[in-house]
Each structure stands twice: as C-alpha cells, then as structure tokens.
Length: 142
Image (cartoon, rainbow, N blue to C red):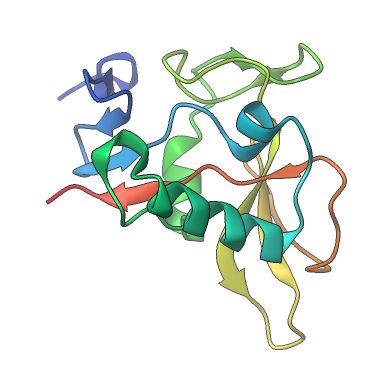
C-alpha cells in the first residue's frame, strides 16, 4: 500500500497528482495565489478564472466536495498555513495557505461547508463569510 507521503506527486505541468484517487490539485489555494480571502461565490469565480487561463494546462478545475477535502487531510502530514501553524496536508503543497477550505457542498439553509485543515472538522458557514476562507481546486484526472 502506498504511504501518504508517496501519494501526492508534483508534476511537470505544475499540478499535484493524487496517485491514489486519480485526481489533480493546484499546488496553491486561492489565498496563496490571490493574497486575499474569498467568500463562496468568489471561490466559484476563482475556479472559473483558473479554467479560463488553463491552469496546469486544464480547463475543468472545480471546488472539491467534502470527501475530497477530508481525503486530502491526514493528521500524520504536516504543512504550514499563512500564520505558520500546522495543518495536515502533504508537504508537496505550497506553504502559506489557508487552514479553511470551501467545499462545493451547501445545506438546506444555503450555508456552505468549509473544512478546517488543522482538525479535519467540517462546518457550515454563511456563503458571504470571507475571513480566513480559501479554495483549493481539484479536477478528475482523465
């Protein structure tokens, strides 16, 4: 079985390949790329922008669902967020990211789910909330 350390590979196209699930991630989240926090709609807009510029040579980037973010989270892995605190994703991802990632999921009240990469805990937030929120885009590898 592949270890968590070997699972994520940096590719020549500048994307991170999840060799277990045949998915690809952008190495930076929206905060690392834009230098600002985003609400849910701005996260969706960021995905559209990355698709327009063919980030990593692809145009099918999207917000990850809850399971995909929770799969990215691994308490044995350590990376540093924007405050220098520990988050639990592979070190192949760039440092200085947010510890809160938007997922594509909403509840019946229209709140959007975020996952805390420090703890792995999901929580629903107001879609307009921006503080410390970012998105890390994913695509299915074809």
